Image (cartoon, rainbow, N blue to C red; front, side):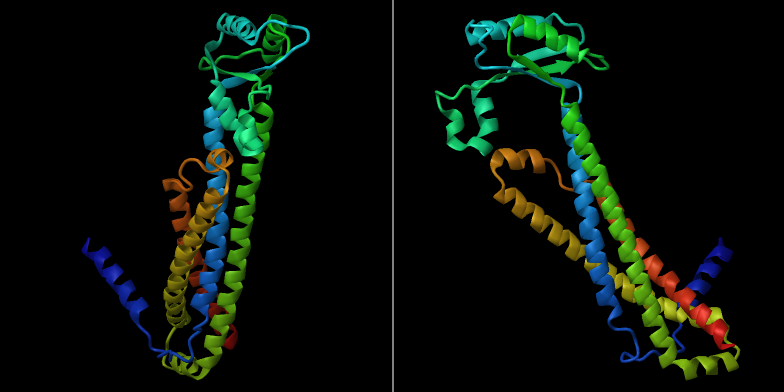
Length: 312
């Protein structure tokens, strides 16, 4: 254990040395700001993509294993009162294997669902509203939706079955596309940040060319010189990445809160319900900061090592 401790102490001392005496006016002072801007954009894009993916997952989990039955308010082929038609549909549903429960939605709930689009007119007494029935399937049940729809139509004309598969599939594709786009933005921002680090490191090498040559004459190795530049970039990129992450999260929560406040209650609740970001999402954002710092540090190391080899 003592050997490992001595080794770690040696590495810490090596990374704390600053024999180049980099002056403040020689350092790439713009580097933290550029890294902060890059991290801000990447964090904002990644947070938005993860939030959309999380919402899609919650919607899918909430609707998987359920179907909705819609009974038209009026049907020329079936002049029976709405309550009798509803009872006939419920009888078919409750006798169907694989269905755990079937509960009609209250009129007030249906009106509340339509208010974001129709306003107060949704509650008008002369507006014919369909009757909706929420059907819960048994776990693992494989329900034949077309056959069920035929039996329900025979029991009460004007009845339709919606198993949510069509729009859920589109929602999941949109969520995957958003995550892929967020990752592409992160990669592009990383490439831009690497280019910035290369430029800043080369500027530092040019500013300290004489000092580097003197260190070479004194027997300093290339890795020793590269380590000092890499240490400088590490601390400056860390400051920029942390600042960019904080700004990105603040912007994300500000935009999400504004969107939720300005959307109609019914529509906004469906789109923005639940936590915007989970624990796993915050871990990914933390990994984004770590990756940004690591890429910047390794880029500086590689740039210095390559330039020093060309100087020899």
